[in-house]
View 1 (cartoon, rainbow, N blue to C red):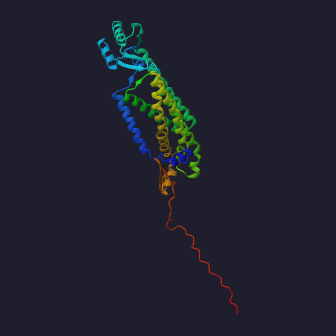
View 2 (cartoon, rainbow, N blue to C red; view 1 turned 30 degrees about the horizontal axis):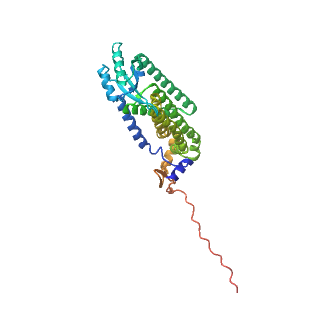
View 3 (tube, rainbow, N blue to C red; view 1 turned 90 degrees about the vertical axis):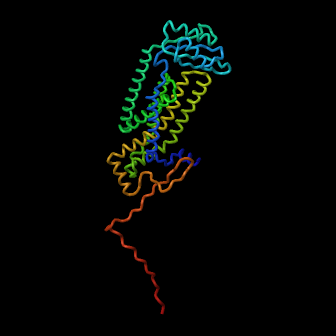
Length: 372
C-alpha cells in the first residue's frame, strides 16, 4: 500500500484512467440519473429567501421539542410550518426556535407570534418576525441564474483561447456533472437551499474548473511527445493525469480540512445556519469536482481527440502492432490500486517474400602447419 502511495507521490503511477472509461461512465451515469430523479420527484427544498414567507425566531427558556412546537403552530393556524431548534455553543448551549411558514396575514401573525412566545417562555417582544416577499426570492433566483450563465460563457471563452475548444467542451461537461450531482444530493437528502448555498455552488464550480485546468495544462505540455514517441493520445492523457494525481489529491485534502472544520465547529458548535449551508455545499462540491476533473473531463478529452486523423492513425498503427493503449503484460497489485506494468511491443514476424539476411556461416578453425 505504502509503495503504491509513494509511486503516486512521485508521479510514476500507471493507472489506466482512459481505458476504464466504461467504469467511470457507469458511476457518473448512476449519480446523474439518481440526481435527476430526485430533482424532478422531490425537488429542491428552497429556503425562505427564494420562495418567500414569514420567519419567526425566539430564544427558548423551556424544554419544548420540535414536535411540540409544530403542534403549537398548527393550533395557532400555521399549518405546514418548518420548525427547527438551534443549539448555541458551550458552555451555555442556548436554544433558539426557528419557524418558517407561508406568508401570514396581519390577522394571522399576532396569534402565531403569541403562541410561539408562550411555548418558548419569553415575552412577545423577544419574538423576531421577518417577512420576505416572493418577488425578492424570484429576483435572487434570476440573479443566480444570470451569474451561472455568465460564468459558463467565460469558462468556455478562456479555455478555448488558453487551450482548445475540445478541452473547453470536456470542462463544461465536468461542470454540468458537478452542478447536477450537487443539486441532486440536496434534493435527495432534503438540505435547504439558501443564498449561501448558491454562493457555495458557484465557488465549487470555480474549484472544479481549477482542478481540470491543472490536468489539461499537463496534457498540453505532454502533447508534443505524442508525435515524437508515437504514443497514442490516450496513453499521453493517462501519463499526464498520473503525473498530477498527487497534486489533485493534496489540493482536495487541503481544501476539505478547513471546510470540515467550518462545518463541524462553525455550524455544529455555534449553530450558525448560514455557515452550515455554505460549508455543506462546499464539502459536497469539492468531492464531486475532484472526481469529475480526473474521471470525467480527462477521458472525454482523450476519446474526442483520438477521433482526429493524426491521433487515429497512431492508434490504428498500435493496434496493428498488437500494442493497445496501456495494455500491460502483467499487473502488480499495490494496495487497492492496480499498477500495470509497462507495455511490451509484440514480436513481429517477417512478411512472406520479405528480404531475409543470409545466415552467418560458422568460422573454421585455423590449423597450424605440421612440423616435419
